[in-house]
Amino acid sequence: MNILSPSILAADFANLGKQIQEVEAAGVQYLHIDVMDGIFVPQISFGMPVITSLRKSTDMFFDVHIMIDRPERYAAEFVDCGANMVTFHLEATDKVDETIENIRSKGAKVGISIKPGTAVSEVLPYLPKVDMVLIMTVEPGYGGQAYIPECTEKITQVRKAIEAQGLSCDVQVDGGISADNLKMVLDAGANVVVAGSAVFKNNITENVVSMLKIMGEK
Ligand code: DX5
Ligand code: ZN
Image (cartoon, rainbow, N blue to C red; front, side, top):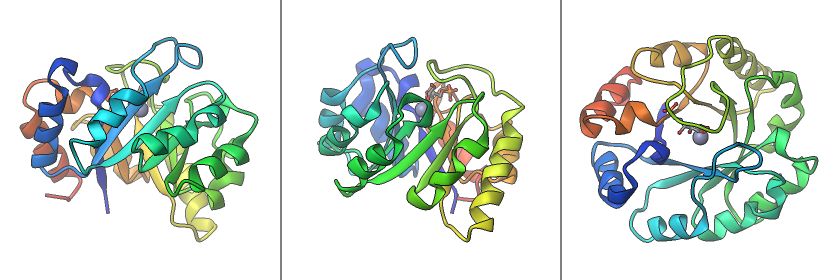
């Protein structure tokens, strides 16, 4: 099954609740929530109080992408706020197993992410322990950037490794994805697709419907 996970980083925060209702009504189940700390990435986005508020307003699956230094400090707390899955960065910690366990012990799904410059081989040892691998297809930190073509090969590499080990991890892609390159990332092996600008700019419902069609989910 292919899943679209709209990133609210590109939403109009003055109308956030309304825009989330619109993506949900258009047939989306996941919501991608980008938390940035100004240290692991240059930008600061938003944090726990926002997620706690959103949790009261929707039953969507909260796919929380934490771009924060030493995620072991906060990972469990994001589950308390309402995350159904927490995805942290391999590069942000030397306590990868501890971070996985912190999330898992709270009953949430675990994702692990690598930046464009990090080799797929770095993440392979963790495949049996996680539910999802996020291959960043832009440098994390900002929405609206262009897809980095060299990342396509990494999507294929990680999908092949998952299959070779007989595992069932999801492969997520995040950054610069639109209706124009969506089929390419699916063909490469991704099955969970994040899209910020491509969903929230212009007509949300039309954007979602056309992307879900390409994904064979509408
Ligand atoms: C970037 C974030 C992305 C971002 C994607 O660091 O992780 O989730 O919102 O935005 P687009 O789809 O506009 O590239
Ligand atoms: Zn993200």
